Amino acid sequence: MGLAWMTPMIYFTVYGVAHEAASGMLTAAYLTAFIAIFFTAYSYSRMVKAFPISGSAYTYTKKSIHPKAGFIVGWALLMDYIFSPIIAILTFGIFMNTEFPAIPIFVWIIIMNIVLAVVNILGIKSAARISGMSVLFQIAFILLFCVLLTKDILTGDTGATSMFSLTPFIGENVSFSSVFSGAALICFCFLGFDAVTTMAEETIDAKRTIPKAIFFIVLIAATLYISISYLSQIAYPNFTFANIDNASYSLVQLVGGNLLSSLFIMVLIVATFTQGVSSVTSVSRFLYALGRESILPKKLFTAIHPKYKTPVANILFVAVISLSAIFINLDAAVLFVSFGALTAFTFVNLSVIAHYYIKLKKRSPKETFLYLIFPLVGASFIGWLLTLLDFTTLTIGVSWIAIGFVYLFIKTKWEHSKERKIALNTVAEIETRKNYVR
Image (cartoon, rainbow, N blue to C red; front, side, top):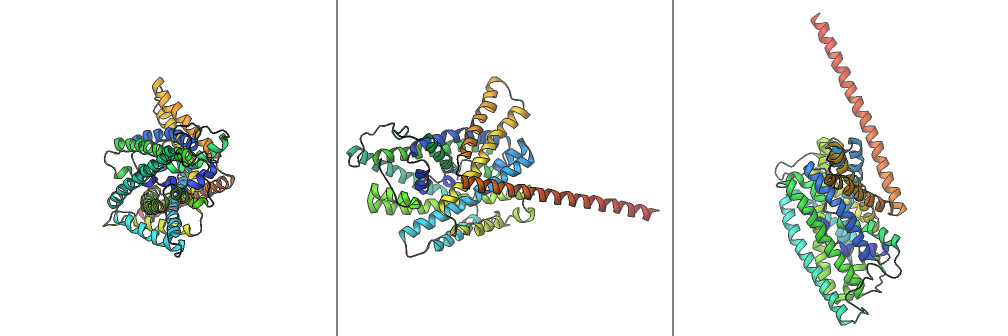
């Protein structure tokens, strides 16, 4: 489910956006993102052992640092989870429209939205089966693509000079700011390892299974992404494109012609479908966790279908929100997800320190390294990448968090007013009983 949520083919989905953000230095950007994510993956693996329940970063921050900090992290993470299905649906519409230009994008968006809702309502097992097959298809295509790139490099027809080069990592005119800016956005491509923590209550032996899954997901993804970007840069060092939304389609057509590009569209359709299934699964469970904590209306967001045992109301809510894919561009959606994810990642790293090092006082030399230094490096790295997102994204992200603060303030005031009213009614009832006794 984690690999399906991540979608190995996401490399192609965000290729144009990432290429532009990293000024072409994709390999260096992916390696940088992997290093940053590895620290955070470790922190997630520690926190799911401590709290094997739904809620992910929200739960970890709330229980380790403070409930109000947990709320803000949950609010930021909501942006990440809400926009993830939108990206899958929008990508599906873009590439289907590329293949069938006579049919408008919005038609494909509506169709995809309905199908995702139905599959998720039917249950987690059906989603997991579909996801497993999809991941195998995606990895098979990526391996084929890498083989074709290797062939082009070895024949020398594309201008490649050597199979082995450090140029993709340290180019002649490397701008480190561009590499790190690209890495900040590319962290989005690793999302999925964190999403599996939202299914902790549905996982057998979650304390052992989920930490292993987290590291497998991150390592497999890093191997695939770095391999593709390295071979692509070596084979086609001067590759350019006109449209960032479907730049990968141009690259695939260049490598394998019409046959490979047709296969690419087919695999990408399957990939975006399963990414959509997995992301809707995750966000619906996350909404359930927020409802159970009474952050969102409890009666609505904790309702479970008696037959399918799924949060149907949450799934339908996500489906309605996802219709906004008709109006949002892919670049903006990716950046919003990155803001929410990087904010949550920073606090998960800090949660390890708060829970293990401060509360549990695990402070031997080894434990100091594992529960203070390691997560602190992760928090610093991820926090720095967060600041490298563009100004518009940061402004909208901070505005979203400000709205969260206002919502929390109003909610807290209303709850205190309600509690006071109940207390006054109780006192009045006691006085009435005393008078009755007299």
